[in-house]
Length: 249
Image 1 (cartoon, helix red, strand yellow):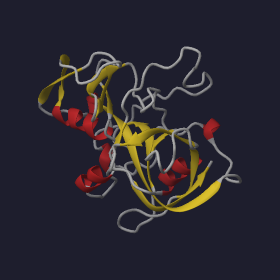
Image 2: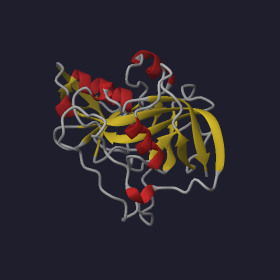
Image 3: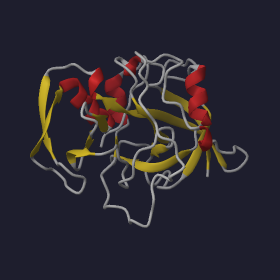
Image 4: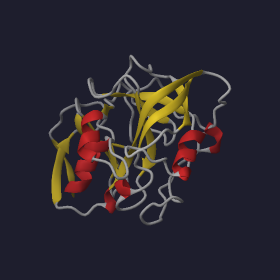
């Protein structure tokens, strides 16, 4: 899949070229493992219009991590990615072909017709929720497929304010980290306070990885859930952080 790259007031093309994680579906998980844990909260799409500083899928209170342990590391770039939502898109109809199930790649079955800007968002972000409630997912090495949920590279469900992507050689799969300082945006300005606070409250887990060559030595991509209205990429939640500080482990 491809993941997000642009933030509020930034050049989307440039970010898409530099931050495109892939989430190729892995083989089905062992039935002995339960993911996500049963006590994790369920996230629902807010019914509010274009998101503002007060509308976002909030991170669960149960995911706060102690900042008193772990390795502190400065100088990180943090981007975010999200699940596109078909109802917020109204482009020309575009037919999509691919796989009708997870365990498949480069299929040629008809997966339906969707607004072209929604299809583009799915390719940019890696996942989109259709009007039927199913998910149209995409990965560079798999193509499009239909699923019951958005997925990470290991086949697990993406969890808002938990799932994140990095190059495996930088932060291995399963690494936990917290964002302890938000740094600054592309133009040097501070991140909106509410956005920074939400990112800092979360306890992140690396379950995704970048398309080879598009990650970077100090670059992570954080999943923030479904878009909450039209114009989401112009909101305070679609951001790039530079010079961020992480506490790792």
